[in-house]
Image (cartoon, rainbow, N blue to C red; front, side):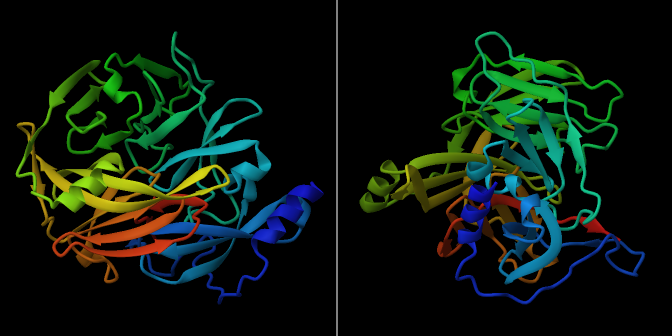
Length: 368
């Protein structure tokens, strides 16, 4: 325990103190009308007394705003997986983080890192023991997706995509929840992420390279594969083309609930530094394609008033006009080492490069 506390204390040495702002404490406002919170992310959690409890006060940042010190205390193991080595945070969706316990192997959904959830009564929802299909594994997770904003909703379905062929679904709110496990045959989906389409009411996976989209319909026990045709691909300079060839490519599928549009984002990232065996990557180039119902992926530099949010959480879209600090027609990306804004029209890049312990963008939450 003393070794853990020593390592944690070093993380905050030399830090300047920021003003403390209490956003909420169980009740958010005296107003009965529900409001929307701005998108935000967790910066850190500062070790607090009693130290032996290994708790920290949450530090968050609203997108394009200063950091805010909260009074909400969270278990530090949710942020410092490498120090505690007991719980691994494997993904997030709608403000809920998914953790996998090293003690019992149980996957849990927790709202501890959501700054707008209860300070005094955090929720932790255990899912049934994972079932591993033959020739599959359930230790390495690609990501987690939810069909609604809370796993406590009666009809909420949680999807977990594992590295490899297995895709698993569960309804946590059922009296006796169980897993429905699917083995994906096409290897282009093995390292892909799953997302939920509210427009179609189904889970979708974008294949590696972005040429195939798989859709799973749980109600009718059907799935389909759609081939995408890329249109209006921009001509790039020889220098840009060589840069893209030297990068790792990440594809993201994201849907705008407000407009019903679906976008495919190709993000090109390059390693700029190796730190203790971990690659620090920087976004070098980015392209956005708008998908239609016919399987066309049309390149665009104009997504209107929308902002696309990419992180280790499930991606989402917002109208910039709903939040004054957001830039319309842009993409926001957050990962473990980089926070970047790309304005699509002029390809203006605003970049921050520092470690982010929980690179999960939290979409707006409805509060009273």
